[in-house]
Image (cartoon, rainbow, N blue to C red):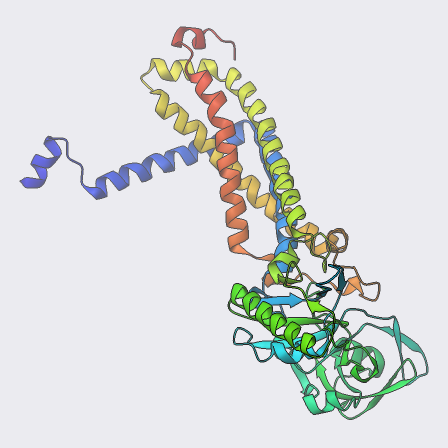
Length: 454
């Protein structure tokens, strides 16, 4: 009885409201599908415009996602920072001298900081080298000169063997960690190679481990082989902290790390002063950057992230707003053709809200299908045209990197958050593009609308 009274008095149960909304949504969806079958040209143009906008936007987004998202062996990118320079200043003359690298004494002190979890190093240059194969032929090899901490920052999968130890690195024992791809090129296998020697540019190295090859998008850790730097011959810097290595640091608090490094520099400057040196170490400016900042740079290893961020924003606006404006013009023309239809429906009692909801539902369905097509197109571009895309974004900054080794894996291509964000943004932009012409058309009087020719 109570339920009957509620119905008679105009009350609706939640289940009834949900059922009513679901029924309308289902009706709008069926009408949209019918419209797509009846107006194939308009639907095709609309979905193609949306697909192209989504595709090229997703290509750029996925490319930068390759640079920022965790990927083997750079699984800790969100917590990774780079210290790749130091500036000395003469307090008397004010002269400043910069260097694109730090000294080993800086690395040793970094390991003592509370804000530092792990520290690894890599040299800031990669000479063109060749490895001598057993058959006598030479094979180009891209080799990184690193320390033992490098393998603690980056999580390599060792197929066999191990990384070289700190003692082996200190004593310059020419231990070599080889990738499975290069091992197959040189030896034809990845098994039983630990302990064997390899000649690279007339210098012998002893293999201590075989690792799974990194993807080229792991631009800070990618190489064909890894060995210790020749720290005994001047690569590791001068008494003022300047050197040739880049410090790769794992930290949970970048600001705390910056503060600790500046305190360390102050202490070092005081020690230099007590020793009679005229140079001090200047506080950090942009020498310390996060991986995210580096990833937003145009060049894979550069630091122009601030200028490039504005460029990216303008690019996204162009790729999404301009097609939306064009679609708005197409919708406006189509609404003129449907004025007679809208007039008849209004004459039979349809409200402006009902008609507007129908138009927006059609726009939603077309945008959704167009976005899915755009995603498939973007996957195709990245999968088969990824070399061009990566080269344009600066991944191939080193001539030794073999860009043909690029492989777009499933985890790199399928990024639900990235696609979902792009889809929602496209729905918003396309909805806004559809509302204005639809609303202007629906405001016309019934008689004027019914007098329009179909």
